[in-house]
Structures are given as structure tokens and as C-alpha cells.
Image (cartoon, rainbow, N blue to C red; front, side):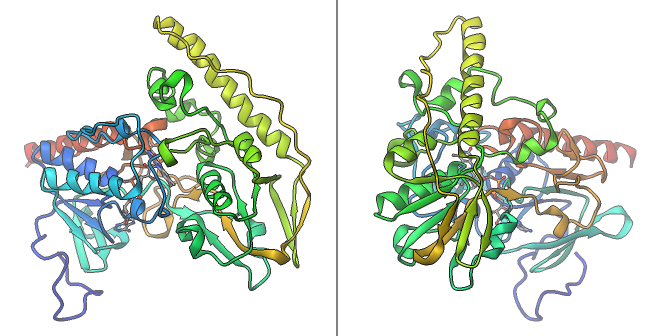
Length: 427
Ligand SMILES: Cc1cc2nc3c(=O)[nH]c(=O)nc-3n(C[C@H](O)[C@H](O)[C@H](O)COP(=O)(O)OP(=O)(O)OC[C@H]3O[C@@H](n4cnc5c(N)ncnc54)[C@H](O)[C@@H]3O)c2cc1C
């Protein structure tokens, strides 16, 4: 470990005793923990640096959040779901509890409260990590800092009048914590739909500016949709089968695990009384403007639903399985306003997705134009010894999920172990 430029003299270092940590994993969410588990299984010494606490991203979600994929998906390597409700949806704190128990189950070597501020080139080809607790060096680094990193806001969101509170989903806790008044939610992915429903049920008048998102019914023929999808190639779809790299930024499927799980999409929200709008296009003074594209967005969601129906018909039938009954959606009718007077609004909530954040602190040219790491089998194709795990669509559609990250974590750990034995053999 090199001498620290960050650590005030006399304080206990979060890096104490780490002189021989040749492998550093950054982040203790499910990806960092899964990599740590797989490294431990292979006997590779390492440390996990976590700037906050284990499972911090889940801790940051709103109070009523429930898992969206069913409970059986909490199945990290060596720690399958052991509860009694595999098709239920545990609340936020139970997801965190699962991750904490996972970390304890193999005594994961985690240093909480140690953030990595920069990852640079160190001496003699090693990595230099500038952390909140001092600097350290490593031979291999696995970046597991989150699938969904930096909240993204459309340009128009910068134009709201001063005095109108504008927050991201991260800033949302519960309806009572918001100022009174009407609510404008921008973005109709999973998060926007769930927050809109909760606020509507709390008696708020909610307007939802919609974009394009796929939707699915929660429980076709009484079985969870994710359990059906697991029977197909959907979750294993490789990143290079996407229509374009930008498709990685597309919205997740509209559905919810709240209150036991139920359908939640454009039509259910409209029936509830949430006021659906087109995309936000601009704000001028106290007037917000919206595109005339709501019907197109719903048609996009319907087309993805049709894709899933066709996939079920082909793939489930080929396996000799019964194909669930998925009826045609009813016609969608709406005549949304193109303008809103923001006078009565208490808050705007942006749920317009995320962008990668690596370029801000990883001081190597290792990302593409959108900020996603350039990788093959989770290894950087630019810098040897650098790995990524938990990135959305890193290898497959499931790469960033609780049930998919383990496959990538095993690949990372095996690559590191292989590199180390090759180095040892060459010595
Ligand atoms: C609203 C929402 C709902 C979701 N629901 C589901 C679901 O139902 N099922 C499912 O399978 N997936 C779901 N996901 C997707 C995914 O499982 C989560 O995003 C998950 O948290 C990703 O795990 P991760 O370990 O890759 O990243 P994270 O959980 O984000 O963990 C990254 C960790 O790294 C730490 N960190 C970040 N930067 C640094 C740094 N520089 N130094 C040190 N530490 C750092 C963070 O504090 C954090 O603890 C959901 C995602 C969102 C946003």
C-alpha cells in the first residue's frame, strides 16, 4: 500500500492489513458479493471495498419497494432462495437481509465505508486505487459499482421553474415525504409506473409523461411471468443479439412486485386514474409541453408483448409445454393534453433511467461512446487485469440481475485464478 494523500493522520485506516490484497473488488452489491464468493471458492485472496454498506443500492430504494422479479430469483452462487414463497416478492429490507446473510455465509472480506475515488495506473503495471481511506495497489481489479449508476434526466427537465421541486427516483421515499400538490412523473418504466401508482393511491393527482416501455402480465395462467420467461431464451439473450448498442438503454418491462405483485402498465394506470401524457418536450415558464406520441408509445409496448407471445408459442410448444393464455390487449384510447400549467404542482419526479458512470473515475480509456465498458467475457478488452461485473447487458440480458449475475461472477473469478496461476508458473 502506498502512502495516502486522502487519509487524515491518526485515523484508523479502512485499508489496514491489506498490503497483500492483490485482487480488489469494488462494490458490495450482489455483483461484488457474487465475485467475492467465487474468488473465495477458488482460494483467491481478495478484498471488497464498499463506499457505504452491503446492498446500499437496494437500501436507497423507496420505502414500499418490493422485489420485482420473484423471490426465487434471489439465488446468488452457493446461496439459493430458501424461503417458503418462491413466487412472492419480498420487501426492500428483506432483499438487503438476504445480501447481508450471503456475505456472512462465506465471511466475505468486505471493508465498508471505503469508496474508490479513482482507479489509475500504478507502479510496475499494477493498479493504483485512490480511496477515501488512502491509496492502495492491486494486480487485478473487479469493478462492481452498479448496473444502474447515474440517474439520467432529459434536457427539458432542467427548465422547470425555480421553486418547483425536481427529484430523481433515488430522492423518493414515500408519498408523505413530498410537498403537497399535483405530481408530474417523467418516465414510464418500471419505477415510474410503481411510483405513480403509489402516489395515486395516496390521493395525489398524478400525471405520467410516458416513453416507450415493454409490458407483460404478472401471472399468465397463475404462474409468474419471470418463471415463464426462464423456460425460454429471453433471459439468456446475448448482448450482441440486441438491435443496437443503444438498446441497452431501453426501459425495463412494466410490472410490479408491490402488494403481492400485479399487472402495472399503461392501461392499468389509465384505468386507475393516473393521467397519461406523451413525452416531455419542453418547459416554458410555468407551462410544460408534451409530444403527441402516447399512442405510439403504447403501440411499442404492445409490439413487445406480441413478441413475447410469439416467443412463448414457438419455444414453449417446442419443449412440449403448455403455452399460457395471453389475450390481445384491448384498444387503447386517450386524448392527453399537450400542455400543463405547473401552477398546482408540488413536485416533479424523474424516472427516466440511468447512464454508466465509469468514465468519471476509472482513469483508463475502457468505455465506449455511451460509457459502457468494452469487455469480452467480463474482462476489459483494453486493460489486462481489469474486470467488470453487474453491468446491464454485460454478457446477457440477465447479467445485472440477482439470478443472472452469478454466471458472470464465476467467469470473472476463473479468469483471475487462471491469470494468477499462469503468472506463478512463469516466475
Ligand atoms: C428500481 C430497481 C429495481 C430493480 N429490481 C430488480 C429485481 O426485482 N430483480 C433483479 O434481479 N434486479 C432488479 N434490479 C436490477 C439490479 O438487480 C440492481 O440494480 C442491483 O442493485 C445491481 O447489483 P450490483 O451489485 O450490480 O450493483 P449495486 O447493487 O448498485 O451495487 C454497487 C455497490 O457499489 C458501491 N459503489 C459504487 N461506487 C463505488 C466506489 N467508487 N467505491 C466503492 N463502492 C462503490 C455502491 O455503494 C453499491 O453498494 C432493479 C434495479 C432498480 C434500479
